[in-house]
Amino acid sequence: MDGQQKTALVTGTSGGIGMELSWLLAKDGYNLVVVARNLEKLTKLKEEIESECRTNVTVIQKDLSQPSSAEEIFEFTKENKIRIDILVNNAGFGDWGFFAECNLGKIQSMIQLNVMALTTLTRLFLPQMKERNSGKILNVASVASFMPGAKMAVYYATKAFVRSFSEAISVELKKTSSKVTVTALCPGPVETDFWSRAEAGESKIFSNFIFANQKEIALYGYRKMMKGSTLAVPGFFVKLSVLAAKLLPFSVVRNLIYRVQK
Image (cartoon, rainbow, N blue to C red; front, side, top):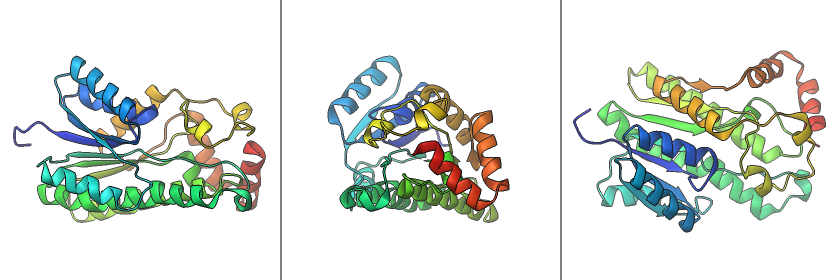
């Protein structure tokens, strides 16, 4: 680009895919801005990465389920003259149970985090990337984005938004000859603490699916982002699930998902 060391901003870095992506970026020489709620885990990640990689890590403790948090992150980067070359919108959570019985506050926080924060960060950083005609955005969606998901209705809906949103922006950028790319990572179930936070211990999904390794998913998504791919769907069976969701009647798909995870 211009000799300046590049910087990536990654949300949801206290564990799981976000943490693994942070390591991949650091090992490739990127400075990092890591964002999560847990300051202790962020500080530990910073210490470990800086001791092993020739890179600087900036920690931002922020709860992205709170309104205005995305704007505050953007303002922090402006005030500190941090140019973001890669944006990874990884933070998100789900909730398991019948919609009518789910906690309303948790639902609203999920929509704020999974949809509003991701959309806001993308809108704030994308114009800078377009102006430089360089940059990459990775939005972590899910295989859930291709189908309705009874007993996780809002989570599936938020991920459908993420995928649709990412695909649409990707087309807009290509049609304007921009070199900026947007990638939606759509994994199946992954071995992270997502499921404990979703309180899905009683779900049959654990016996019906083989859970993927978070390191492998992060590496797959990273490579696809670097290639500028619009969609990143890792794994043969996940791809097969997406194909089935497209070919089977809608009524079959929505009832099948209910049976899989009830």
